[in-house]
Amino acid sequence: MAVMGKAKEAGLPLMKLIKLRGMPILQQLNLEERLLRTSSDNWCLINDGTNSPAIVMGLSGKLSELVEVKPVLQDRIPIIKRFTGGGTVVVDHDTIFVTLICNKDAVSNVQPFPRSIMSWSGLLYSEVFKGLADFHLRENDYVFGDRKFGGNAQSITKNRWVHHTSFLWDYDVKNMSYLKLPAKVPQYRLRRSHMDFICRMKEYLPRSEFIERTIKALDSQFSVKSISLESIDVPSVSEYVHTTKLLTEQDIQETCTIQT
Image (cartoon, rainbow, N blue to C red; front, top):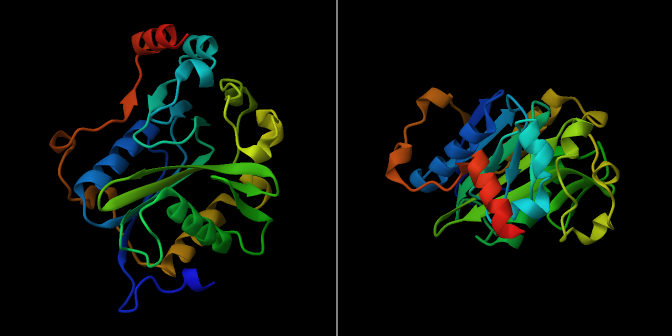
């Protein structure tokens, strides 16, 4: 694949890699937004599971149309509105998160537009799953055959972009019941229920192998340098206006009142 070759003729751009395990999803999203808005480096964050279940919505998502609010409040499941677009997901310790934050000129032939970034990511993950399964990018989803296992969202600024994915290594059926069938769905979903629409990555490869393959695929595009979380040196959260938000119970009730 030509597009999967070297990112720059003069050498590969540096990408800093941070491997995490069980970081709370709210903390992860705040870190991502901070790196997008205050750093000039390319980053990859891999978080192997979050510490407890949470619902994460896109920036413009309508709560009353996407979430079964009553059981969510009863079970005290946190709801987070992230700084990127995209759909609504339930995440937990069996979700693997991969985040790519890049300067707009970091990868040749990739323009800072959603479709261009998405197409490139599809080629990247084709390398990750090569020889393992019938992987495809279907609309904005990663699928094996016609069943989704990876949901994507993006944010694009003047000079940088972020593309992050939640991968369903496994899932709890009860957690999926917190989500409503959205009014707008991918054409290939065909009104299937959540259980008929998604699949588990663990049926295709071990958790650690997926992470290793992802890093190897990135290493063909970037000079990947692993660093510790503690070594990040970018301005603190106070130096930009962050938009990721944990909704309070009052927020949820007020939002549902307005939207219904």
